[in-house]
Each structure stands twice: as structure tokens, then as C-alpha cells.
Amino acid sequence: MRESGIFGENTKMGATQYVHGYSGREALRLNDQAETLSQMIHNDSVFAEGSLVLEAGCGVGAQTKIVATQNPASSFISVDLSQESVKEAEAAAREAGLTNVEFRQADIYNLPFENELFDGILVCFVLEHLSNPEQALDELKRVLKKGGLLMVIEGDHGSTFFYPDSELARKAINCQVQLQKQAGGNSNIGRELYPLLKSAGFADVVVSPRMVYADASRPQLVEGFIKNTFTAMIEGVGEKAVQQGIVDRHTFQKGITDLYRTAGPDGVFCYTFFKGFGTK
Amino acid sequence: MRESGIFGENTKMGATQYVHGYSGREALRLNDQAETLSQMIHNDSVFAEGSLVLEAGCGVGAQTKIVATQNPASSFISVDLSQESVKEAEAAAREAGLTNVEFRQADIYNLPFENELFDGILVCFVLEHLSNPEQALDELKRVLKKGGLLMVIEGDHGSTFFYPDSELARKAINCQVQLQKQAGGNSNIGRELYPLLKSAGFADVVVSPRMVYADASRPQLVEGFIKNTFTAMIEGVGEKAVQQGIVDRHTFQKGITDLYRTAGPDGVFCYTFFKGFGTK
Image (cartoon, rainbow over the protein chains, first blue to last red):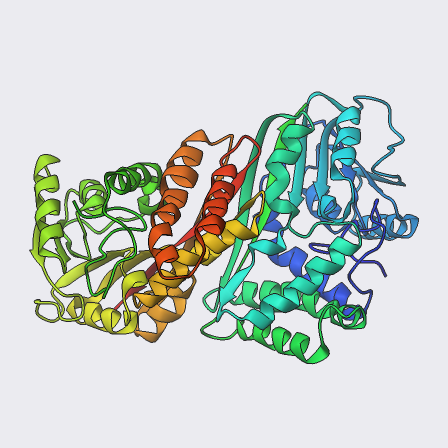
């Protein structure tokens, strides 16, 4: 089972190494979060009727399912570097009854498509894992029609803040940031979408932040985001971070406890996703 | 001339000491920001027709003008601890032609009003300066009618992040956080609104974050917020921070340069205000 969903998708595509684990809990976490956050992130993932859309870095298809269902009059080609993920995505799409998606294995740096084939391109939680997001954007632009629409969605771990504040919790989060950096990625890429899309030469670039704000009045986000998505993700990199000497086990565990503490009745948690739009 | 506007208003009310300066540039900064951000913050500062509304901590009346104009069928009593600010607010309101506001000097911890007098209460950028926000909320609740609506708007300096990232810029921001702490305040109070309103016993508490996202595609926010509001505010505390040994002059200046750098063509700046609603 490969990962899917927010913070864990599309990770095979151009990433040297991937920081999250492959356990059953990880899979559950990734399912949880897709359901909790899809509306916030995909409410405007809309392409013109009849569009041919490339989804670059589909992973096991968690976002594919949402966006292809939402755009029944468009056709999708969803690609991922991992053949295994592509197979899983294909099976999931079949099971969901999707008829407007075709899957194939492909490298985001060297796409097997002619110039200007696609009317639209969707990239979700992919650039954060790449060592050269600029090159990937160049290649995506090559296969996009003139006037075509690119949508890019990324998280930003540096956007995280919470109550009660905790230095140990921030240290635990930093383990994930460090490991992703070692793997060639960038956990804080969300805030960079505007300069990235601009410097790749896209026009009409607009970036829209999507803040997840969770307190006890929003129990679904407390469960679905603070606990089952974000903290579970950080918890998942603990063993590796300890092994690599980024943190000691005790500090890490206390940080995780403090993160779960923000899901309490007086806790508050904030995290921001960024969605960038550009046209060729 | 006393301060008004975001990050600088209502500061005499219950605050032991105030961290911003009183220069002409400060006044300009505070005018700039009120115009740039008022819509984002006050779009839903709406009270039922015929309401009697207390504005607690009105400063020189920058928010008063916006909200009283927006609620022409309500009557406002706007109070501040500083008699001088109240006089300025009164003059400004007269000049603006406001006829639905009455001003008076008052202490937020000991309001000169009978129990349950007001239909609504508005508090903007006040709690951050108080050493005992809980006590202030108790007193505000006392003068609010059963079923009455409280609105609280606060910033959160710990919500700040930007591109290019810079440790020196974060150090410069931390000077403001430290000085405000020394003065008994809390620069990061925005994220705490939910637990504060809940523990004061308000019902139906809802907190809504309002993120200011500024990049070169939003030139008004780049000028009005990154440069003339936030960075100008931080710049304004530099001398005091250096005098108190919180930072050395060189480090501070470099931090300010890096903050202005985020207003460049490839820069990005994020800051979050929080607006809390509760009923008695």
C-alpha cells in the first residue's frame, strides 16, 4: 500500500526519498484527511467542460477521485513515477466507477506527451517533494496549451502555529522539515508558489491561501486534521528522526504529546495550504 | 497625537505601557492599514438595527469610524482609558459627520455602566495589550445583555511567515513580541480567542481567522500591509529593543531589511488576524 492524500501523495514522482512510513495507520490518516479537507482545497478545482487535464503526480489517486468526480465533462490523464502507485490508483478509480481518467507511469521531469497537449494541469502535494520544482514547472508548461490553466496545491509546515504553544512541539515538526529537506524536498514550499509560478513564466498568477483553523467548535477538523492528519504525520517520522540523530526520543515524544494537547477542549491549531493558479 | 488602527489602537486602556512610538510616520502607518484591511476585518462587524453597542478601547477612533458608519441604525458608546485619545476620537468622529457615537473615558476593568446595558460589544486590538484579558472579558460580559453579541478582533504576531524566509527578520519581529510581553501584553493572543471567550462563559463561540496574504499581484497589500503596517510597526520598536539589550542594532537593521525584502516582486507575506464571536 502506497500513500495517498494530503502530505503523503505523489511522493514517488521525482522525489529521491520519501519521509513518511507505509503503515496501515498512515493509510488511515491519509484517507481521513482527504475527506476532511477536500472541500477546502478543491472547491474551485474546476476545469472548462471538455478539457483534457493532466494530473501530474497522482499517487494512489486520492485527489484524482475528488477532482475527476467534480469535473465529469473533462478527461483526465493521471501520471505518477511509481508504477505500483499507478496500478493502485487505477484499481481505486475503477472501484469508484470513474470513467473519465486514464492512468500511466511517467516522470514529471520528462513527460511522454507532445507540446501543448493539455487544456489544464493539476498538481497536488508534489512540488514539496521535488529537488527541482522549477524544472518540473518548465516541463508542465511545455505540455500545456497556450491559454491553458495550471493549478498547484501545496502545504507549508512553517505556517503551523497552535495553542497552547510548545517549543517541543515545534521541534517535533522540525524533524519532518529536516527529513524532507534531506530527501531533496521543501516542507515550506506553499508560501513560494507565487514566485515559482511567476519565474516559470505563467501569466495571471494568483495564489490563494487556505487556512485550516481547528478548535473544539470544529470537532471534525480536530479529529480529522489536528490528530489524524498533522500530528499523525509528524508522529510517523519520529523513528527515522531519532535514528538520524535529529532529535532524542524523549524530546520527540513530549513534542507529540504537546501536539495532541492542541486537540483538547481549549486547544487551537492553524495550518495553511496554498493553491496557485496560472495560465500559459 | 495618539495611535489609532491595527496594532496600535486602544493602547491606553488597561495597558501598563505601550510599545509603539508616537511619531508622524506611526500615525501614517496606522491610517494606511485601517484603509487596507478594514474590509477584511470588519465585513461582518454588523449589529442588529437599534442596538446599543459598547466599543471598549476605541483609541483615537479609527475602528469606530468604520463600524459606526457601517451600522447607521445602531448607537455606539466608545470608551478608552486615555482621556486624550477619547478627545481625539470625538473630534475625528465630528469631522467624519458621525452622529451615532458617544465617547467617554473609562477603564475596561471597571466600566461605569450598569449590568446588562448593551446589546452588543466590540473589542478591536485591545486584549493584546492587557495583562489580564480574562478579567476584562468578565467585566464586558457583566455589561452585556443576555443574548447580546460580543465581537473581539486581535492580531497574532506568531502567525507571521514570509518568503524569502529570514532568521534575522524573525528576530526583529521577536523584539516587538518581547517588548509587548514586558508591558504585560501578549502579541500572540489571536490564536487564544477561542479558549478566552469560552472560559469567560460566552456561548456559541466561533472564531474566524482572517489571513492577510500579500504578494506582488496584490500591490495594495504589499504597500499597505507588508511595508506601511507590519514592517513599519516592527521598525518602530527598534530603538527601544536596542536600548533594552533585546537585540543589537546591526542585527535589527538587517532583520528590517529582510522584512522589506518580502515586499519585492518575488516576495510573499502572511499574517493572520482572528475575529471571535460569542453571545451571553
